[in-house]
Length: 304
Image (tube, rainbow, N blue to C red; front, side):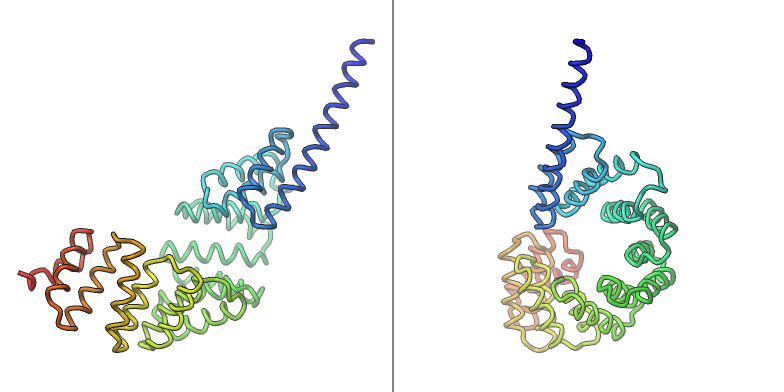
């Protein structure tokens, strides 16, 4: 009788733990959807402590860790989730997600395998096709990159990341006008991505449309004012459009954000030299050279 009673108590305790885990899981998902990623991770931790067989908890904790750039932690969670089930029971999204992590870790061979696995499971999976296309691009295979991404766009013309990725491919192929069209399409579909404006600015710069480059860099700065590189890029466009004083202001802003940003000193030096301020230019070239800028050394001979 004691054994039976003990067993029943065990069942009740297990049920209580399961109910608690379910409630915590709902709370975790709510935090994840609200972009409270650290809060979500903490809740998923609690779920897994109560129920370490909860595959969805590992997957979603992996998603949250990805969003806070904990790629190794995200990879561990996706690996755990995949190990808990057979391929036929898994959604292809888990392989696509793990491939995204591998891509961020620059493990492109592993990323390629997982994107391909996801595509094999779901041939019309546009996000996986975009991911594999970006992986081909990172590996220097522009032809296959373009093929995959164009197929993704055929499947879903409303996929902003696909148009952006195609913009990257054709930019690398030096078709800057087409890259502008693709970046513009991406922006029309999703205007909240700073990188879309930044890269379209680069494309405008390459076709010497400096005013539009400045406009896009300005939008990128508005969206994230703490990136020194964007001020340097806008400074370059301003300088090339005949506005050296405004360019100097941008280089100064970049240095104010990061006093060790070598290219800001180098580019400011180039502009100061053109403005006839040799002394200040040389000081910048010396500083840039000391910080490792490879271009500064060529100007130092004029500073002696």
